[in-house]
Image (cartoon, rainbow, N blue to C red; front, side, top):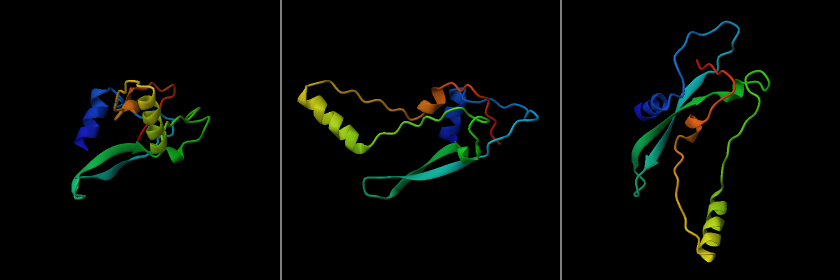
Length: 110
């Protein structure tokens, strides 16, 4: 939890503020997922602070939703094509990419 919280603070993702009247807060919660060693024993738990977005209403709380995902088969196919054409491959880790995007709407977490 500390690592996730420090990442939020370091990236200036949100700020503590007084809750204005007339706004609807979005509840949030911590999610924990185990990270395993090569021998399938639990090494540590990864924590994420997530907003309960299912309580939002389009047009009131947000205008659009964008959640990029990729399937493992797509990555495999791209690697095969890159090898065939002798392209250079680069790896990027977007662990907290969502933290670096700007929102148009004001969002209040509770």
